[in-house]
Picture 1 (tube, one colour):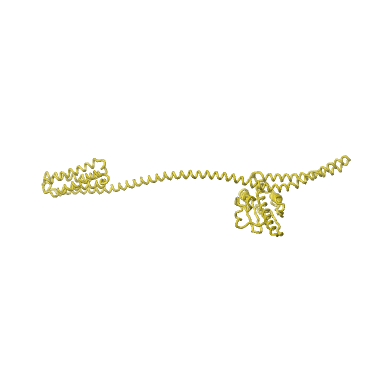
Picture 2: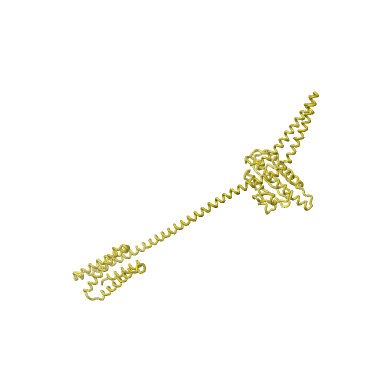
Length: 455
C-alpha cells in the first residue's frame, strides 16, 4: 500500500493549520485544500485498483508528488521553519522508492528478503515519527520561548512607556515642588521681615513705656545736681568774701563744703548718665554678647522704670512692690539688654494685671484690695532664680499653655502684640539655656519663675 498520498495530505493539512492560511492567505488556502482532496482521491484510487500497472503508476505519482512537496518546503524561505518535515519524511520516501525499484527489477529477490525491506521501511516510518515528535516538542518550546520573549518585550515596552510617563510626572512634580519651595522661601523671607518689624515694634512699644519712667527717675538726680550747683555757687560767693577778709580757715571750710557738693553733683550726674545709657542700651539692637551684670540692680532698675511708666500713663494707678534680692549672687554673665527686656515684659504684665483687678474692684466698690508686685532673686547651687509675682486676676487654666506662643495675648486689640512673652521665652531658653515657667491661680494671681546657670 502506498502511503505517499496520505503523507502528502498530512503535510498539506499541517501546513494549513500552522500557517493559518484560511484567514491570512485565502487564495493559497484554496490551493492547499485542492491538493489535500487530490491526495485523498489518489490514495483511494490506489487502494481500489487491482492492476499491477496502475499500482506502479500510483507509486511513482505518489513519490513524485510527495518529493515535489518536500522540495518546495525545503526551497521556500517562507517555509523555513517547516524544513524539519523534510528530514522526517525524506528517509521514508527514499526507502519506499528503493523497495519499489527492487520489487520491480527482481520480484523473487524482494520476496526472499521481504521482511528485511519491511523492517527498513518500518524503521524509516519510526524515524520520521520520532523526528516529527521531537521537532514538534522543540517548536512548542521555541514558540513558548518566543511568546515569553514577546511578552517580555511588550512588558519592557510598557515599562519603558510607564518609565517615560513617570519621568514626565516626576519632572512636573519636581517643577511644582521647586515652585512651591521658591514660594515658601519667599513667604519665609516676608515672615522674617514682618517678624523683625513686629519685634522692633514691640521693642519701641516697651521703650515708649520706659520713657515716662526714665523721665521720673532722671528727674531726681537732675534736681540734686541743680540744687547742689546753686548751693555751691552761693558758697563760692561766701568763700570770696572770707578771702577778702583774710579768714583763710573759714575759706578752707567753705571750699571743703564745695568739694563735697561737687562729689554729690558727680554722683547724681553719673546716676543720670547710667539711666540714659540704660535707655539707649534697651533701644539699640542686642549684641548677643554676655557681660558681667549685677542682676539685683538690673531687676530693681527695671521694676522702678516699669512702675513709673505705668504711673505716667494712668495717674490714678498706685501699687506696692517689694523686693527680696539675694546679695550672694554677685555679678553674673548675661546679655543685659535682653534680660532687661524680659524683666520689663514681666513687670509690665504684672502691673497691668493688678491695675485691671484694681479697676474691677473699684467698680464693685470694694476698697480692700491692695495691688502688690513681688520680685525676688535667689542663688540655687549653680543657678540663679528670679521670681516675679502679682496678686492680680491670674491666668485661666485653659490658656496658660498658650501664653508663650507668638502673637497670643489676652489684652484688648491695640494694647499688645502678643510677642512680649514669646520673645522672653526665646531669650531665656535659647540664648541663656535656661527655663521660664508660670504658676497661676485664677482670681488670686500669677508667678513667673526664671532659672539659668551662673557663668
